[in-house]
Image (cartoon, rainbow, N blue to C red):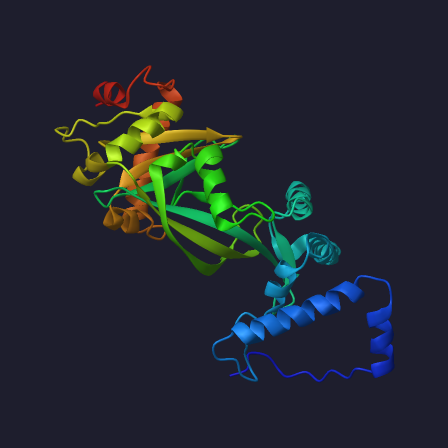
Length: 326
């Protein structure tokens, strides 16, 4: 079923021929679209007159050479910058606008019009699904920006944006080493899956489409061996809570007894931990649900400890702090 009304386009052959032969951007864009259309049609499993999977304007813009992607994106940004002082974007301000433009110029994102005439940001991200030999997952619990006073819950697979012209494996290797300080030689790549997710960006408050590559990785050695490698490169907060304390909920006490890793990169800090698949699904539940509330409590304890006592590298352990409270 068609999602939008059909439109009739009338093309005057002579004028179209002149445009195609003129020495400007369209001379490169038209053949690029023709190649994209042909490749998409031949790869599509069940194309029809209403839908060809993958034949989307957003996909085409993302497939263009860098200079054309940037030109399209900057044109969209200029168009929306002229509209009612950015009222469609709510909290978009001058600083965010500058940062968004910087992201476009550096190739970190593409901007296109969506079906309603609004603007949509498109980025490509890579997530690392790291599984230990006992089945547990190495996940991100939360993060703290340089200007933030507390750790924000953000339970997900560790990951980040792909750089321009990076393959999934290139991004995976860079993120392991540069962002999360995970020893890449301790991991084996099984396979990579792809997905598309649409959310509103927390940073820019605009609709964003995420082309996500999920890298399925397993540890080559027992999990504690990888943990030792990670500890050498991270600040580790030792377990554990006083499990006998009646002042703590048993579920919270279970999570407070885990080794937690803090990795700092640029102006942010990321909190990482080993959890089971069931715990991971529970902790990333929607806001207000029991899992999200428990994660917030866990990070609140951790944040208080880091702010008041912990200096990193075991100068004062998590265990010592918890025994001194309550």
